[in-house]
Length: 124
Image 1 (tube, rainbow, N blue to C red):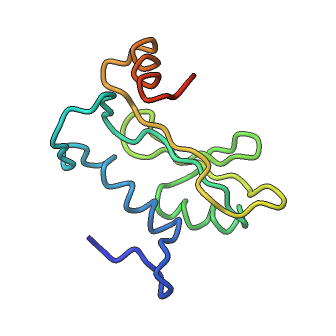
Image 2: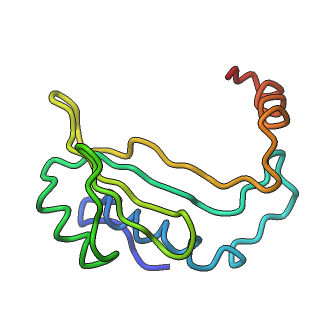
Image 3: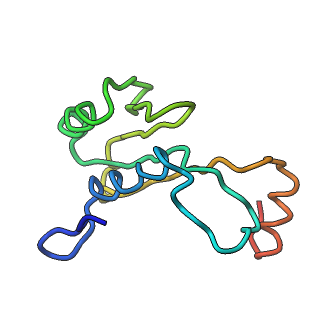
């Protein structure tokens, strides 16, 4: 695996995103030793807040192609299917960071997922 750290030992958002793209392109390459409670198929989406939206747009359009603007958010399609990567401006007083990510779930059933999460003390 390539080194994802800067000279200070910190993983950059760009390096992390590039590393996260690998499972999208080859989801079978990640083996799990036991069957998980909620079986995910792949990473579906990632959203990050950036300090300079236009500079980031130029960089990511070279990687993923043209973006689609949806309000204050830029959406980039990634791979086959409904997978995407999104950028938005960081809110005042906040730092650039990952905001959210989504996973596709095998045989999705909302009630089953809620029960599984409740078993771990998570309420929805």
